[in-house]
Length: 85
Image (tube, rainbow, N blue to C red; front, top):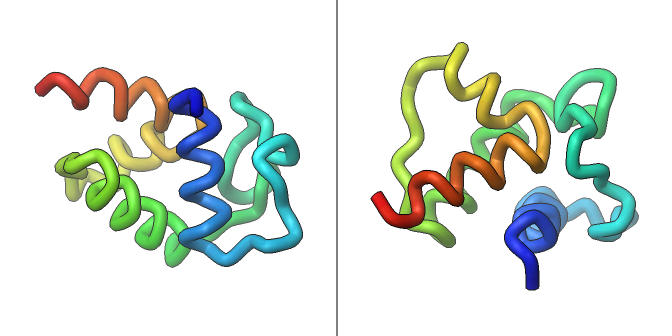
């Protein structure tokens, strides 16, 4: 499974979004507000799932995290750049 598909699957499973499929989530669509409509609680859930699955460390910097969690593309870039760290 491609990384972006894995991330979409992780979002769906960690947030119990049973009515969505991987194909429903666009790579460059905002995950919050106007896009997928997720909120800050969802961001925490996704963050914990990402940390667990990819052994990542997330910043406590809200502005930085807002950029990381903007879309599937930005999350995939973050995971990719931190995989080998």
